[in-house]
Length: 184
Image 1 (tube, rainbow, N blue to C red):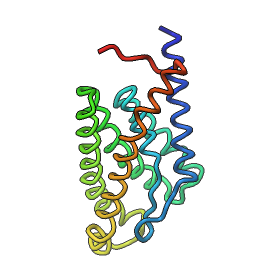
Image 2 (cartoon, helix red, strand yellow):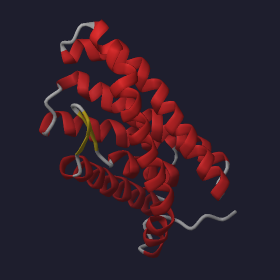
Image 3 (cartoon, rainbow, N blue to C red):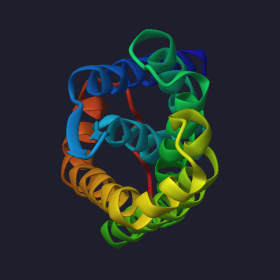
Image 4 (cartoon, one colour):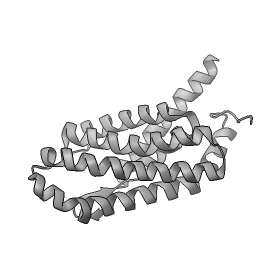
């Protein structure tokens, strides 16, 4: 039992490190000041393997480390990163936990994508004026022209990339004996 917990902790730590590297070196400008990074792909993979609480923990760890090292948006950026990652990864992991099939993965990733869009539209409206220093009306104007397209692109990329790389990554982790083989 202790060996299993150690392997899980080691694997989750490794995935957190990969997620941080993804955000540190993988930022791609998409729309205006908004940049895509693939950290949520790694976070959701952790959640699909170990469950939604792992996605929550990984989101918190990576968001805080990002805040204190490379982010210029401070605590508000950390909160927004945490909300964005959790809304996608925790939703997908929660649903996939109940339906561990290809169709379940597709539905779970699509639901995570939709949840992330809804959550981020609301929170960008509420919080972006505070940390961006924009008037609420300016942020409201950006919701449909910048934030919605950005979140559509971001969530779509995250879901698509995850769908295609999840199985090879889990297979590799199983061969390394870092993840147990599921018994259905």
